[in-house]
Length: 221
Image 1 (tube, rainbow, N blue to C red):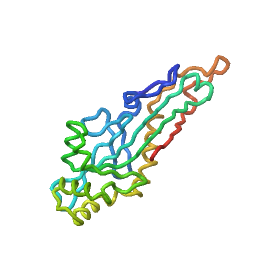
Image 2 (cartoon, rainbow, N blue to C red):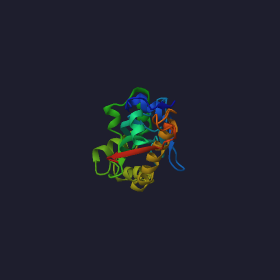
Image 3 (cartoon, rainbow, N blue to C red):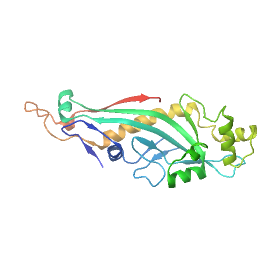
Image 4 (cartoon, rainbow, N blue to C red):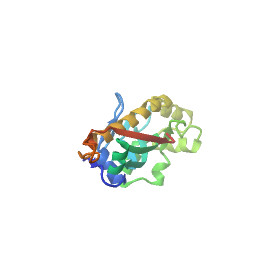
C-alpha cells in the first residue's frame, strides 16, 4: 500500500514503514526476504528482520538459523510545501546496525512462536561489518552454543561452528550493505505517491513530475 505526500512532514512509525515498504527481498543469488505481514518469522519496521536461513553444522543435532537484522530509526517524508520549495521530493532515512544473527534452529522457532527471551539470547551469536562473530574468544558462549547444538565442548565444536559460518564474513556484509540501501531506496520511490498538483499558480509543472530523491544516513553500519 502506498503512502502519499501530505501537507505536513511525516515521521513514519513502524506501521508507516510497513505500509510504505511492504515485503521486500535483498541479495544476489542468496535472497533474504523481509516479510510484511509477518508470519511469525521476520518483520519490517523500525526493527527489520529477515526470515531465517538454515546452515548445517557438522556433527550437530540441529541446524543453525541465520537472519539479517537492521533498524530504521527514522524515515521522514517531506511536506507538500517543502516539495514545492525544493522542487524535489527528498525522503530522509536513517539505517542502523546492519548485522547477521545465528542461533540454534530450535531457539529461533521458540522466538518465532513466543518472542525473544534471555535464554535464547544466550545461545545467539552476531556479526556486524566491523566485528567478528561474537562467540570468538567467548568461551562461555561457545560452550552454551555447542551444548545447544549437541556438540562436545572444545576446539572441535568451534571448528564445526566456524565452518558453517565461513561464507558470512566481513566481505559478505560489504556486499550486502549497498544492496540493502539500494532496495530500500527503490521501494520508497516505487511506493511513495506525490499528488499531481501544480507547483504554484504561476508554474503549471506538476509535483509528481519532480524527482524523488533519497538521503540515507547510516549509523553503526
